[in-house]
Length: 142
Image (cartoon, rainbow, N blue to C red; front, side):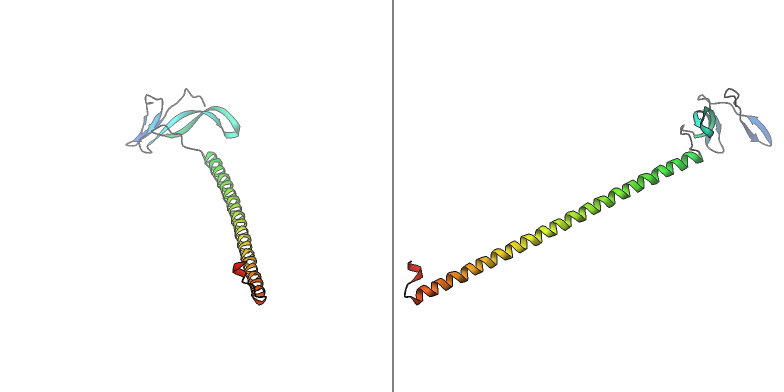
């Protein structure tokens, strides 16, 4: 392919008529609404040269099937990575919730133990007060 030998045609009333390049050096297909452009880059078999590519009229080169496949693979890999990260965050959140539950249970046990100790201390105080009364001593006056 010689990039300088660039020609296109359109069929009009059964006759091929040559297309002229626009000011940007593109051949415009009115029927397709696309432009045929010279594109410099790496394509088939990693060959770096000038290729013909379709582009939008705004100049965006349409991706090849290979480029679409690579992009889809990249998006799939990114989605997998995001899913793994979300799973990791969910696991971490679950661990934190479990730890918080354990701390709450431990605090409840400590509160129950403190209540039991307070009840025991109250009972002991009442028993001692009863003994003092039995010995004729008013515990409130001691």
